[in-house]
Picture 1: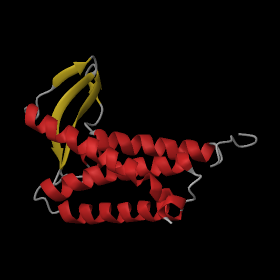
Picture 2 (picture 1 turned 60 degrees about the vertical axis):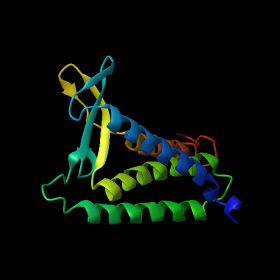
Picture 3 (picture 1 turned 90 degrees about the horizontal axis):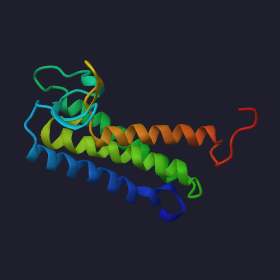
Picture 4 (picture 1 turned 90 degrees about the vertical axis):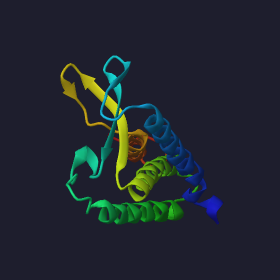
Length: 164
């Protein structure tokens, strides 16, 4: 049954979540918090922690948001797994995309449950402008959503839509 649905892509979810967690563990061990380390022009490693959600929204004192946000993330994970379970196995691009988003969600969920916060460490900047600091789970979610949109643009079957 599992091989005839999008659930066959759960291995990719595991890979994404594992890479995310390994990267965070390695950088927590090696980087001083809140001090940028240049990697490339316009790219730093900058170890930070976010108790809120995207762009530090809901990052409030007291940590009350840990469990409500963890429960919300669990609901999202359940919805994504349900989507994969209902998806035909021939929807490879869509299934891989959802699995990638799911891996990112699981990576950040692990942080939130274990640490009460999400570890972020990638800072992209230009001059004095800096994008929000993020992690590989966030990047996976972004790439996965972009692939879901691409699948939609291709008509869900690898062909571009007529008149598009």
